[in-house]
Length: 260
Image (cartoon, rainbow, N blue to C red):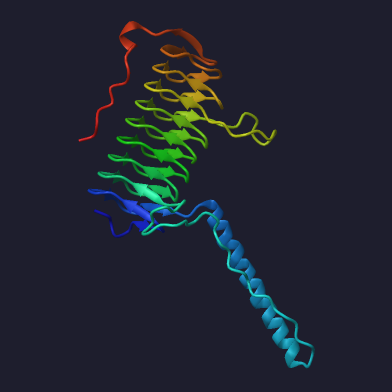
């Protein structure tokens, strides 16, 4: 079921049994595309204004100048060889059994596996790849060029920045903030998001600094500020986070079941 108010752009492939609710947008144009459209329209407007000026000058007997028309702007990488969307670099793919709730925006170039589910008002930017059986909670933002594995739960109001890697069986609690810029607007450095290894849990209101790795099976307690790598199967607590042994009953991978 795709609601009549949903908007689907460009080369989009949606699997079987999908439910796409009110005002969802699938295949939203990238920021680069929108800037190209604006540039093209401005160029066309300037060309039209110049034609009007030259037309007036010619009517008065002055020499008419040559007017260049706005050139069509090609979006590099928009398409490559293939039929019906196959092979497109900016294709959008959503697997079977998706539930995409109202006002969710999924950009071009996003690839999502089966049994995907969102809350309301989710934003997923271009270049993101998501595995099977993944839940993304209400008001969560995934900023793009991010890889998310299978059986992942991201709770409401989480922020996932560009260049983040989240492996299988990970839990990320509500209001968790992952970061990717060590010195915002002060130094030019590559953006490097955190890497959350298999089976790790990140509690509510946690802040993880750029490039930090959360080890396999690690548990980051609510409200922690993680400034350095967390070893596998370790408890991280406090601000800045300190590491403690993980209690025996927590030395198991997250039990994330497939949605019915």
